[in-house]
Amino acid sequence: MRNVLAAALAVPVIALVVARSVDRRAGGRRLLAVVALLAVGAITALAGTRPDPATGVPPTRSEPLEAAALSTQIRTSESPSAPVTITFSAPMDTASVELMLRVVPSRAVDIAWDATGTRLTVAPRTAWKPSTYYTVTVLEGALDATGRPLERPVRAAFLTRQAVAATVAATSVAAGEAAIATAFRVAFSGPIDESTLDLVLSPAAAGTLVPAEASTAEAPVYDFRPDEPLAPDTAYTVSLAPGVRDLDGAEIESTGLEIRTAAAPAVVRFRPRHGWTDVAWNQLLSVRFTEPMDHASTEAAWSATQGTTKLAGTFRWAENDTVLVFDPSTNLGYAQKVELLVGAGATSKAGVPIVAAASITFTTAPKPAPRPSTSSGGGSGGGSGGSIGGSTWAAVESYYLGLMNCTRTGGLVTSTGSCSSPGGRNVAALWQDAGITAKVARPYAKKLAINNLCTHFSGGNPGDRLRAAGYTSYIWAENLGCRSGDPYAAVLGSHLYFQSEASYSGGHYVNLMNAKYDRVGLGVWVSGGRVRLVVDFYHPL
Image 1 (cartoon, rainbow, N blue to C red):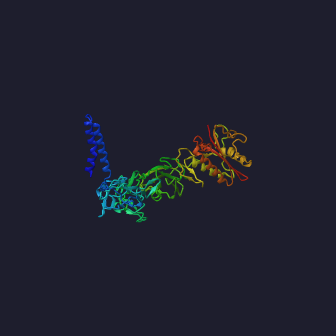
Image 2: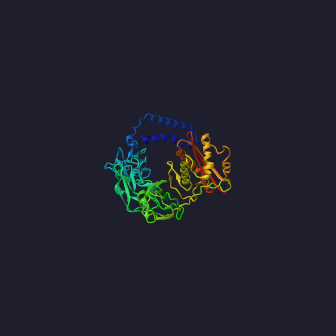
Image 3: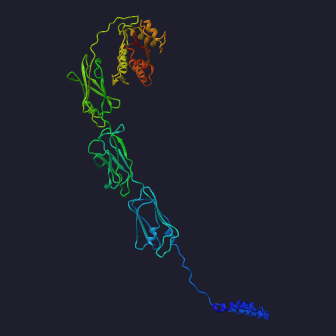
């Protein structure tokens, strides 16, 4: 049929070509008309002819896998060792899928397929990192077994559980420093693979890791016990060794502990000092250390010996256990040689033995000659004056003189009136001048108490009162205490206030500690419950 149609269509064309060739001859026009008629007839004839129906095979179209196989899977709190599974709705070209597989964040994985080629398992080669969000994706374009491509990716997303945490701490710490006999405790927040457990010390120290009493399977706790005491005054770093893992195989990370061991203690000084020859017969004895000390071992290592006799007494501790104070049971006596010793057995609270034994010797003051009781009266000498007695409150004045000399010579008066860690300041104790007491300080204290006054300037200044009594030196100062109640408590309260001025060099404290004064007049008077204390410091020209 195609041949017939082609031939029919070719007739007009051929006729036209022939017509052109004969157009130049006579009668050409008649011939052209004939040809045109033939062409129209041929076309008409063909139009009435019915062609056979066409047949064919449509092209193959790639269909995607079932939509359900392409949905994203999301899981949380996954074990770091858990595998991830992706299931396809049809067998897959495994090589194509593995080529289009992506793991983010990147992690080395092992891949396995089931026998049908529809189930892909992705497992970490070691473990997923804890507390991390992962995606495992098969990209679009991966082929199934018949060559059909995925038109969109297949993805599994999951969040691994929190990491097992570890903390490291020293078991014996004082003042921020580790004892040399300390252990190191490592505590975990979850189960661990005990076979991987190890601890690293720098500097290195041999030891043993053992479960602590508080340890459980869910929250293990271990103690590292060094075989030998650690080196004193040394910085140590303690951390988990690399490769310690939890039960799922995830590596456990921890921040290392950095700590310094306590230094070996040493003696800073004794009170009294070595070689002193004028120590009072009622002097408390003390020793200061560089570190807080163990009471029992230090007291056992202490001795105070007078001649061949070891002195008995009581101990007390001060200043965060760095000062041992020894109060002899009996007076030291006059002109006696005394040796103080701290032996090698003394240890610090951190268990560190003392660097070396230490000792000093001193001599108590000779028995003093009696002071003259006559008053010098007037002139520049300012003598001792008459008897200090004659006042109802002379005993309180004597008590207050002791408080002043405790602070002045390096001690500290406590709230109970005792003298803590006394001595050591290189300045002479004040002595009470009978003349200044009787003629200046005591009369002025009486005036203040009776008239309810508290001033340095009633009827003149302290210098005026001293000169009127015959004490003409310009080297003087005055402290006043104005309180009420029990006179002993009142003068103690005033002194504690004076002593507290040390931090800012207050005037009362400066007067008390000034070495240019060698004597005082003391006056205490009580009237109507009011207690007045007058202290006149003085030094003659």
